[in-house]
Image (tube, rainbow over all chains, first blue to last red; front, side, top):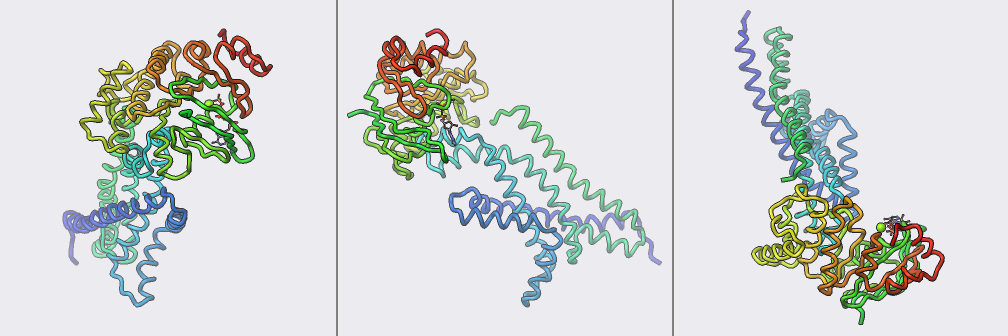
Length: 219
Length: 244
Ligand SMILES: Nc1ncnc2c1ncn2[C@@H]1O[C@H](COP(=O)(O)OP(=O)(O)OP(=O)(O)O)[C@@H](O)[C@H]1O
Ligand SMILES: [Mg+2]
């Protein structure tokens, strides 16, 4: 029987962790862009747009991410569309991330005091100008800590994609365990790697939040 | 013709009629104080004149610009009449100077250099020329309110609406703001101001409007309104105020 050194195990896990990082980045950036587009509709004047985003958010926040992954992977297959695991994983995570980010950001926009809208309106600014020069610059500052904080959820969310066969850190953990029969060591390392990815994110979210609160000097 | 013409204005919030047919004409250069109990509709009236609230009936005209609920008409109206708020409402992410420059640049498309020169002049006018680069949270309430006045003035409005602009200030800061308003009045600016500063209203205003339950209950020069109130409601209101 082959023996595996700790380094063998760690090396394989780290190689797979690259895909966790890539998937996280793709999901977060893609979800962020989609989230911005949705935010535009969500706080816009058109009722239809607002209702659409409302439904979208309910749908994706109200169902488990796992089901969304299954539907993206198997559901599209029913229509004869052959979806590779990486595509289903990326797609589902982007849609899921956007649903949460748009709500976080909407809260930030609404947290800007009503007086800011009134003052800018009384100076003759139109809706788009108010948004661009007065409301969004303030909302963005409020949005940074919770957005960075949410990125932790995205990283952890990628673990679920192992179930549809995407080989990232968790899936690699299972594969390596099957080869080495050392589940405790392997999953211990997997957990450590996740922690190493997530901890800096949640820590910086906390620091950012404290900074913005203490200074509360928006410049 | 009057600069501000308010005719038979009615405004309701849900089932409550807050303005029940207001008629009020303000002449160019006139300073009008609006007094009255809490809830009598003073703020609502001012907000209608600036188009922050829409009216249900009647009409409001400011120098030929009519209150109509579409972006173009609202913008035209707001270019004629500026507003100062109780809570200052400075943009916290911009310096005092930038606060004064912003609307000139985005609404009037004034080039940055010109907007800055105007901002410096206006800040100078309210005694804050040296605070151009200060951010709102580095200024006292009185200073913030004066920046707000400079910001409104930079749009060169024909009239200013002031809604209890000293009510959020510590007592020792009230006078610096009132002094600025007094100067504006002396320079011929048309002002409509809701105020609880009875002494100031008496000294500076040409006319005083007493609002009661959504109506203009009494109106006249300050000597008459304060010295010889005709209705029991006004007498009661004045009696409840501090020494006039
Ligand atoms: N947006 C709103 N929705 C519903 N009711 C409102 C709204 N704004 C004002 N009101 C009501 O209209 C009435 C008049 O309010 P307004 O603010 O004009 O009074 P005011 O004379 O300015 O009082 P104060 O001296 O307290 O500022 C009040 O009864 C108030 O509750
Ligand atoms: Mg009021």
